[in-house]
Length: 239
Image 1 (cartoon, rainbow, N blue to C red):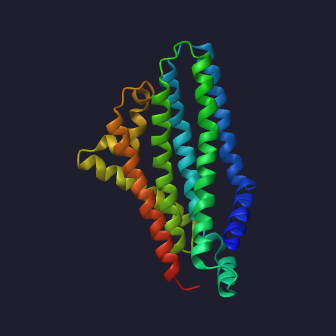
Image 2: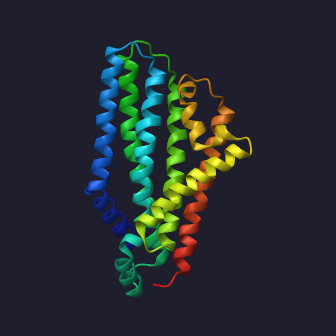
């Protein structure tokens, strides 16, 4: 447990001071401030402003950043991991668990820290605050679940591939392929793109609880499978 906590603390600090996290957060915050200013000066509906921001800024920027964060989780420090494990100062399970925890927690904190105040400001300054609290929470959770599924897949690929950025690209491609497969079988509303295109209605509270639950369960399952694959592959890989 001590080794797990030490690696977790180290990785969180490394992420907090990384240029990737700073650029990612800065882009989201600056864009959010711009959208708040537009909502305050123009007659825009709060639900549509929130939806456009998430679909055009938060989702694509975060997907790219999260893929890199996940892709560099293990392969980016393969030499350090090998030395630590071979020296028996940490087990494989503790190492992967700390990496998974730090990356998932960092992504959730960044996304929640941007979405919560942005939603509040949009509702306060928008000329037409047509959103519901339950709808905003539901829509935010759905978007976060989609993004976390990308992160989980990237972490799994990071334990398998030595090239961090190749792992990130494959994770993004896999997410796109999943969306395409869901579209082909007639479940376009369940794809990441479907979630984004219906966000305005979701923020207004028009999306049913059943539909939101299916989206959360589906991407929660993808996230679980990705994390499980990361543990399984890393336990068996040669150092």
